[in-house]
Image (cartoon, rainbow, N blue to C red):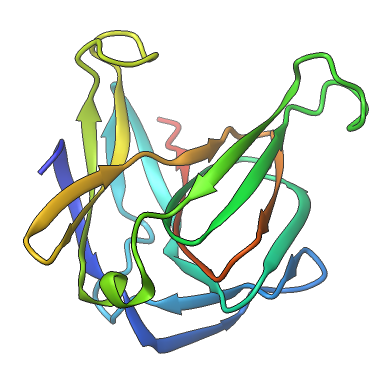
Length: 187
């Protein structure tokens, strides 16, 4: 596994948790975490700061789906793509939405599994430490989603939105992704 594990769970497509609320979310549903696997309220230590998990779970769409631009006021949102494809637009809010001054960016979202593979997979959230092989400074901690399916293990990094930033997402194929929101714990 990659990093220090803090949560293990499975995706169960039979567990329906309900449609995400409109008009912000169109065609997107909460799905499949088994009882006892919920992570809400759990405290993590990342780069010496304490974070509380406020939301964790799978979201999906059977066809296409999208969310309109909305702000993450006090939480950091991480989205781990599991199946499907789409894109996420993030915006820092410093100018009008349509102006381009380097204050918004798009992230392509591509999942590596099929829904069938996802239902057989073991998922593990972990805090990993960069060893200087990416754009993060050496020794910087971050979260990853480890995925073990059919004896093979890989990991995926999240698309993330910082507190105070806004974002929207468009899914062009049936998609499944894991969402975790966390807020800093002030001591």
